[in-house]
Length: 575
Image (cartoon, rainbow, N blue to C red; front, side):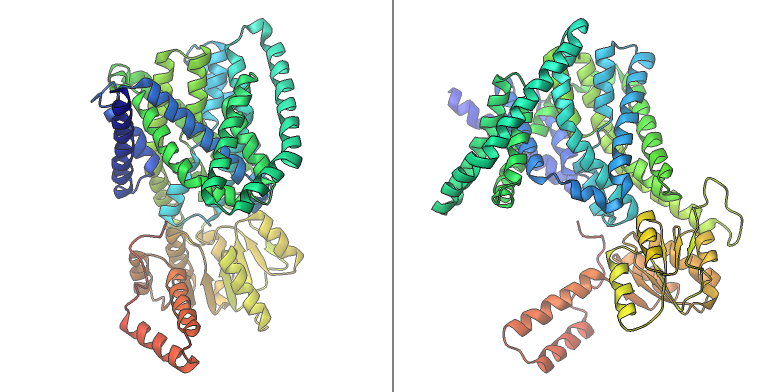
């Protein structure tokens, strides 16, 4: 009977995760939100479809361990260099400032103890990587400036989780022993790292080599799983967090030649248990708590959003990113992250948090996650309207005006490239190869510095801002290439550019039908869809690979383009 109940409960959990994920996907929300909400529905505080708390705890523990294992396999400091200094120092500053403000809010606003306030500060210093990445993918903004800044900060936050997980269990100990406990924990961590290094240099390569030589994917996956869970159990017995051990073994595996294969094999299993983890978290939330303490939940949510938005947007602005970039980054990272749930659970286990405090954190996390897509949408529309409605040539206020710098001498060029990301850089390289002069408008300070060093005429600023375009001397330009991945930025840039020079020919990057139709009405004839162009190249190479002659391939591509069998623009950007 007990075995039957186990199978039934596990099936219900997986089924609930499937239903919640599908609903969230249909509503264009991150699936993690669907997992959380459906967990609330099937949990003991609502429909009570699943009441096996032992099963719930086991599934959650497995999910956390596998999440941390894959984090160790994936983490890379190289990704932080994508946006220069703000990727590292801006991310560190964001965590520290948010942490400090969280302590102040916990102590002064909510009247919590120091341990509770410290844990609250740690929790709100993290944002959701899953939610952030999903929203950026849905909006087609992964390669935008604010998108790259958000990703860099999320990566650094994920890395900092390891340190937080080590510190959190110590908070439940007596105040007079706090520093001694921290020192003891640090010693254990160093010893665990030493053991992991020894294992990584001698034991793991030998073991993985033996398993890999058998050429059995099942044995390889089983080996990775056993090592991850074994390391988690070992560190827990040793007096450290179990998830720290899983992260450590992932970090060691990443440095071996088997790291990429281990990540590929473990990821599907990780996703299944991660779904169970988030469903189990939702089951812990009592909906009646939100109804009974709605004012307290609203107060905590408001404090979290205020602290995180002001801190993140302020730090982004401090590093020289003006205009809508700082607003978009702040709006995209105002939620509480999935790893914050782990810290909150530690708070319960160590006695730092009461059940009421824990329910408050869970409720606030779910609400802030749900509000993030709305905040990004509002910030994007506000950014576009402000940029478009600003009169051309009007003096910019000190707060809204981007920092402008024309290099080397601001001389007008016949071709202007707006946006110097990967697409813009490839366009510039092509123009340089054929001997055509160009100038660049870019808001990334690191890229502007490199352009200055190369002697390229460039302007630092947001091309969607009319004040920046007014400095670009567009009246003397013949062609403008707009390469932004953000559809709103493309449309706004085109409108402002044509307002300055109606005869300007524009080549624009576009993804969606709505923006394409709007740009065509504005007179833009050259619209480039990267997905459409890539599909044609796939067809060309496929036909060549099966032995077609070049003339036949060319004729086939002409026929395909004329028939419009392939959608040139999608209704929504691809995730």
